[in-house]
Length: 101
Figure (cartoon, helix red, strand yellow):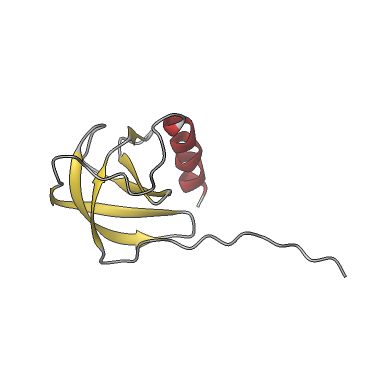
């Protein structure tokens, strides 16, 4: 019997959570894109480089949505520890995925 071991991804945030994030890119529809432990969040009314405090409003399997509730810490937060390299390419893929749902 062959089994397919599929890696399940669990969102590191839930609706109502408040987190500080740095907007890493802007999606095709103008929403800011941030990451929390590699999990992509779309944040409207932001621009690349913004450090903001957001409240999670919706969580899907691979992406989430958040609203700005204030200014983030001065340093911003990149909780996933990933480098900035390749961020735009990964973000474009996530934007395309979100549009399909």
